[in-house]
Image 1 (cartoon, rainbow, N blue to C red):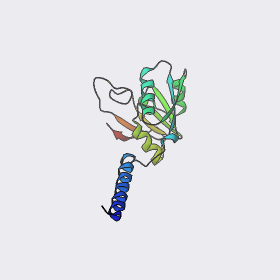
Image 2 (cartoon, rainbow, N blue to C red):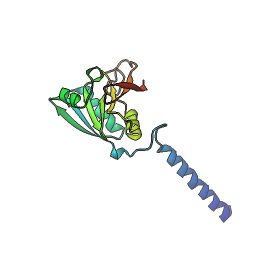
Image 3 (cartoon, helix red, strand yellow):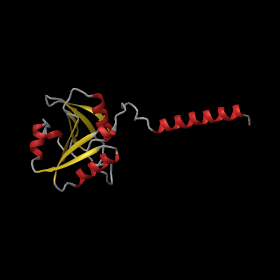
Image 4 (tube, rainbow, N blue to C red):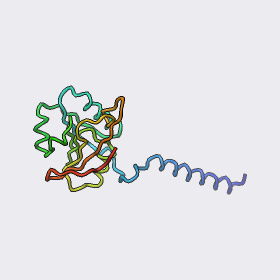
Length: 159
């Protein structure tokens, strides 16, 4: 092997490794790249709620920093943040000025923070089986809804 062939082969190998390395760190399709170290979510929940803790642990595995705040006034927090009772769940999160109500998947939180919609936040109403933190023996279909100031909501994602 000549010196020129060796150098060419080495450069090709370095370029190939760089391409493979970058492929492993691409963001999810349709979601702008966000630094997970900037994704800090404060979760308000009733003390002793196991599924709330499971959702918080799920977000941590997804790269979020979760500040866990057990409170006695969860209904007041929901009311103060204009969460209609029919869209409420067992915990309320706050991130980047938005409300995250219930068992919302991490990808939808990232999408909301990236897109910055004119809304108060997103919600997975109730506690559907199969949503993050509610894993179990079945998976029920559910919607993630976008909430506006007027109490209206539209479907943001479907599962």
